[in-house]
Length: 199
Image 1 (cartoon, one colour):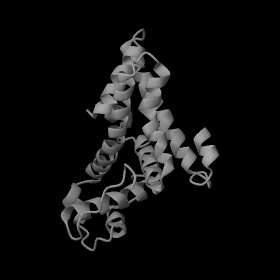
Image 2 (image 1 turned 135 degrees about the vertical axis):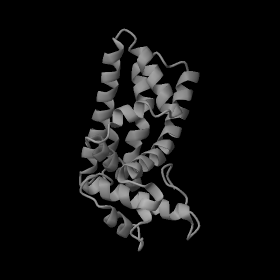
Image 3 (image 1 turned 60 degrees about the horizontal axis):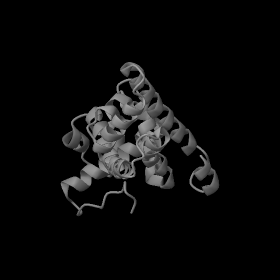
Image 4 (image 1 turned 120 degrees about the horizontal axis):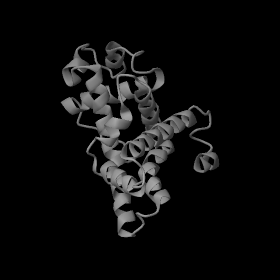
């Protein structure tokens, strides 16, 4: 089981329905975009006969998207936080390349699993949706790994005007997610191990 996978909840439990709705929505949103998928389609893909199940668990499509982000990013950020702490312990925080590596490698490693690829595609759709500002959401999320990594990057870019430093961070988030999503379109994205590692 990957770091991103959630153990299945006991059959018939409320959490199981919620998780299945989130997984179905993540896949459909990643394939077609947030506005091209209806709540009815998500309910059907999650095996829900009750068409109000999604509304009951999330209230709206926007809250559903936020719930998926919170669920996935929490797992990714736990990996990031551990790596940031290891870098701090090794006194490597003055090396900007090392800071960037521990910040973004937990995202690049998503390409190692089909579940990770689904999340990358979903996150790229959120990134490109005008109703969401994913870089700002990430930077203001309060997740420990993101907060610590952000502080290290800001310190390393201390000679820049704060607005410029923030803009560069936004561009990094956008470039990384877009690049990863483009990679997942390759027919050999999961099978060409040397090319993936080089990427």
